[in-house]
Length: 302
Image (cartoon, rainbow, N blue to C red; front, side):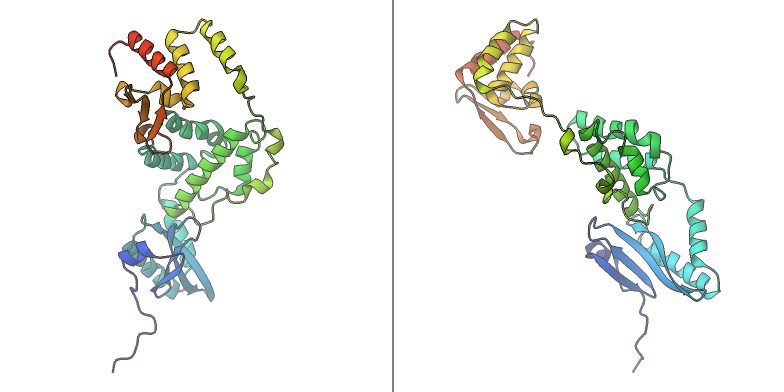
């Protein structure tokens, strides 16, 4: 009978790595896959005894660092430890020779990956523009591996109370970049945006909402609007928006084939709805009159 191996190698395969649940998953001889419970990101680490001390060395994130890459690097560092050298110093020196990834570079990578699936062009432009305006001047040239919570506070503090909505969006976008950096193996520490709100003042007392027009005042508002110098198309669109309780983008992008005059229904397709679900809007007689008038102003387009 063959004796059992005390430290079996190569327990994992690509299928197991992709399906792994949060926690530590051993591949053998000190190599582990770590799956984070919050972000579900996957990264490699090697546990090895070197110079009389137990060390844990990060080897990068999956899938940027493949299972085969992690095994190769782990084998090199085990030999370094066996030869009596410091594997952490060797690993750090190897990483320093690689291309340094700044927050600016990481943000553009994340933006490029996400923007392909966004339909709203305005949101697409705002996503990267807010980072260029508020984050890049402070942390744009910093390595993503070195950014800490105080650096994030330096970005958010100047706008946290004066531009609260913008500040919250900037925080969300910085957080998304840092999550990606960790998952891609460019950062070993946790996301510095986690718990950052504890270092910022409460925004609730500074939020100001626009006043709503009382429903009973709407007829007078429409009458006054018709007397303004705005274009006829603008005034008709505004009135149609009020009568259908629709979003501006839905009204401005409405197409003739979406309107069923006989049934008195406007069917907004799922592709143009924020929630991705088809929306049926009943049309009043005045809505149909507006559509008829708009038809007379049309240049023959859809």
